[in-house]
Length: 261
Image (cartoon, rainbow, N blue to C red; front, top):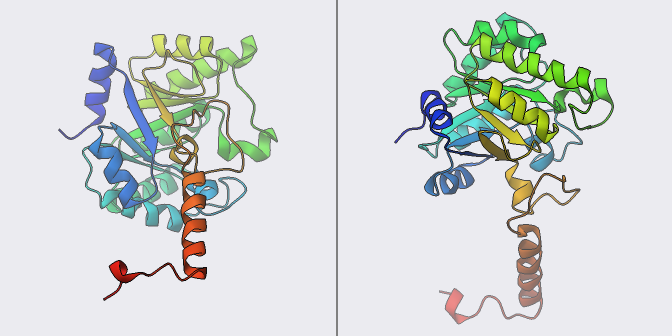
């Protein structure tokens, strides 16, 4: 069954949790789809997880389109959403132009960061293109904030987050990512919206959860966010395999007869 925005809304109504993850390549997306992940985000987190950037700001449209095409080739049942990179949706016109490029690359929807401030662009897009919203901690706003901080710890911040969420719902977003907010604020937002919330570092009361795959697989080792539970340690497994290979090459154990013609 192909997952659509409407199916995700129905899951919220039935109280069923939504599982979402990021993917940046064909093989990872294919495996995620095989185990039933409902939403796959081609996140601009690939800037740090794949391309070695310090943050998400240098990620370009060309890079995002390249990875979106790779994920789309997996022909998943999951809903594939593409992150719109920094400064790719400064106006309604540029947002529409770039969002259409993602649809041509195989995405079924796009994601924008921001609430009230981008509601006009979300509204312009949702006439024809499904949009996933994103509030709370906004990685593309790192230059403005200076660091990554938990949101919603003050009354003013909590009220603004709720306004942001409602603005995105009004603008037609089919769901909203709530990143690094207090659990209490995320719970309030989830209860106030008819559309699903996907939490990342926002407690257990959101309608679903999303994680960066390289964090939960233990591939990204520069740091581990508090909210990112490690379900595997692939970096260590890769290190072990590479060392074993190097050792067998040096000692002439590889290739042996079994691996020769």
